[in-house]
Length: 418
Image 1 (cartoon, helix red, strand yellow):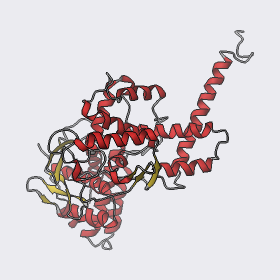
Image 2: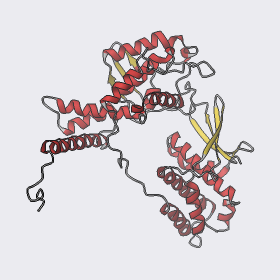
Image 3: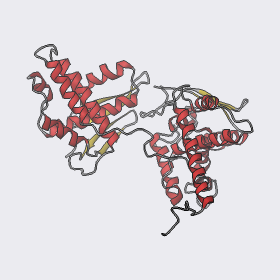
Image 4: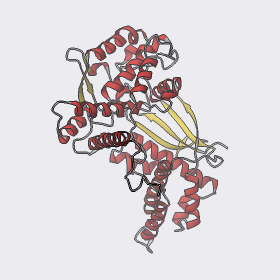
């Protein structure tokens, strides 16, 4: 059975990206979920990606209510809140993976979550955590919006219900749990650069996009860019007279036809470009991009070359992910590769460069430089994390070298068979 609810995404005349929770059978927006999204998220200038994620989480909850014949507003108005067994059922429902069905138009799209209850696959714990958090927040807001929370301890009951939902969230592990070193090894880099080399027998792409795809990988590798930053580069951001690239935070661009608009999460900054990278950029712009129809209608650097309605449009996030997936499939050595791993690789190589200097910079100065080049807020601690990982890796390598040099020797008292 198809889902009755979905998320409709669209671009306003102002360029703002927004979404609504809709009834798919009628196409009409749902009043309370959208009132919540607008007053509690949009009006607080929350990022569109966060609003969209919350809308999707609410769709999952609405499907739960629909499957069990629960009319939420009536329940709350009669002051009947969720019992423990119902909260357990919500927790179990949010564990299941949703199959996404979608229809897309040029200026808007509607996607729904279908087959959720039938699915035996489970989502990651982070996804379930986010779903239950969004549901608890929505129920807390709705209950106090519909009722006088000072009456008959209503507020306490609502807070208790929301607290019980949050208590059912899975344990949220730290971001660095089990990650280890996520950079590519030198061997993997050698294979990657051969795969993207124009004319290479390993290159899986047609000739017309080989230069573009190599440029994408080189920008990620040499500058440590995020995907959103890469896809948001405009030709006007390039200064060929100074060999510089401006990374600019933009949102809600009117001339960007992508509904799922890539954005820079990090701070704006100016990055230096080496001569080789400048040549790659210049060759792509003058020899490849200019030949793509409709590309002259905007100045986004990376465009879609494939014939069709999106030819010449700025490359989408989906297109970028497909490109990386194709590269990853070429060699078993690259099967775990992601574009973001090149950002980690940049940070590893930055640490190695700092460490190899005749007069290495102090840790505080290294953090300051790394934060600027990566676009992190100074003092945020993110740069220190990479410094710490590099030191840990060096320590592990030193420990292994000591073990190898010592061979299998044991202390005399442990080496005796007596």
